[in-house]
Amino acid sequence: MPTSSYTRFMFGTAALFNFGAAALFLPSLGLAAALGLQPLASQGLFDQIALLAIFIFGVGYWMVADNPQANRGIVKLGLAAKLGVIAIVWAHVLFVGDVNVRLTLLLSGDLLYSLLFIQHLRRTA
Image (cartoon, rainbow, N blue to C red):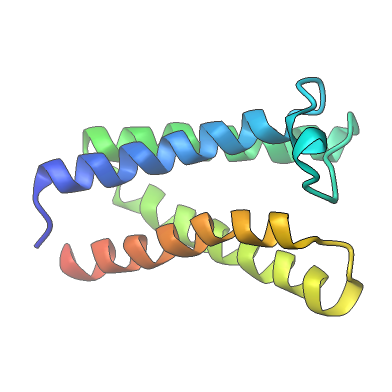
């Protein structure tokens, strides 16, 4: 079973990953554009809602880091969201062709955390 310090670290870094992703894709900062991460988020309503959701999931992971047992449901929701993001991005890579290699590599973070979340859920069942 993972140690509590390991669990806190894992979910703390998951939170930071999401906070960083939300900032990275915030159109007003222009970071994603500067790094060539297409497609870019726009100032549109649904893009802003998506960035808020990414940030809020980061808050959830921060809560899990503080109290993993009480916030186990957040881990399950986060796993579902991360797997959904992976599926959507790969669908765009394979069928639409509007996602570049850089964005696909960034997705490896969601894949890594998905695997870690699965491991956590199995070990703490």
